[in-house]
Amino acid sequence: MRVHDSLIELMGDTPLVRLRKVTAGISAQVLAKVEYFNPGGSVKDRIALRMIEAAERSGELRPGGTIVEPTSGNTGVGLAIVAQDRGYHCLFVVPDKVAQDKIAVLRAYGAEVVVCPTAVSPDHPESYYSVSDRLARETPNAWKPDQYSNPENPNSHYHSTGPEIWEQTDGRITHFVAGVGTGGTISGTGRYLKEVSGGRVQIIGADPEGSVYSGGSGRPYLVEGVGEDIWPATYDTTVADRIIAVSDKDSFGMTRRLAREEALLVGGSCGMAVVAALKVAAEAGPDDVVVVLLPDGGRGYLSKIFNDDWMADYGFLTSTSEEGLVGDVL
Ligand code: PMP
Image (cartoon, rainbow, N blue to C red; front, side):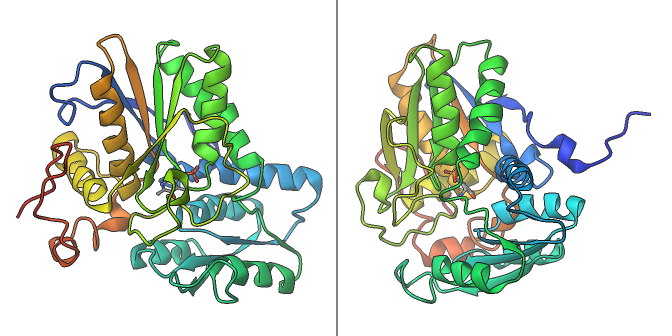
């Protein structure tokens, strides 16, 4: 029989799919690493598994323990799947800008979820950083993976995402583009690709306008899972050759085009990364191979990005960006 004993065996090894429509007029190849093929539906399965296994080995996570983490949802799902398999409890802290659907998903997997305000500074006692620290201290037998400082976050990408992309492109990749949240994806994958190519592969980060990575101060933006108002330890400042800031409007417009033109129903940070990738690809030549990582699927955003009323309320439906990337006009 061809059977898997656990979903954990299916984490990683995601496909690379060519973008064919949104790339009109571009000679470079643009290939999407589609991370919603992971069993938890996002790239974060990779870090969840590696962080838990390292904590089991070090003794920080003991049998029957509770995993406490601030997470925008995707890391929580990955942690919840591995936790179920191994008998741990999960207690997650999320900012209130996260879609209700995503919170419902975490609860469906059996996790407890605490929602905190987005509009407070990181050191405020009600911020999701502060609340998760307090819960980690107060909960017996708790372990906090801390995806913002845990070296196993970038390490998971160094050991899985990077080698997969190198092998899938037969070493022909010339540019790697990824959104930056904790920085784990770009730092780990980027470090591997730089090393294996002798520095040849260009590493490009994409982040929302207003985030610190592109020189902002943490001004609020709506795209979820990327951008920061603080510099996390998991972001290696030496890896990215370039950071491209993308507006919410362009990110969401491209996210809708990916669903409608490429049949890729993906999240807002995917649209953001593709806007940056197309900018890079437009400047590249026919021999170039641009790989863009798409972190998650779009079903968690149906009431926002894929909802015309929500998009119209923010003025995202009607205009055209400088790059000529047309938002979804009613
Ligand atoms: N997109 C989404 C939807 C995410 O949840 C995350 C993780 N925060 C990212 C992008 C960014 O990945 P990383 O944390 O590895 O920088």
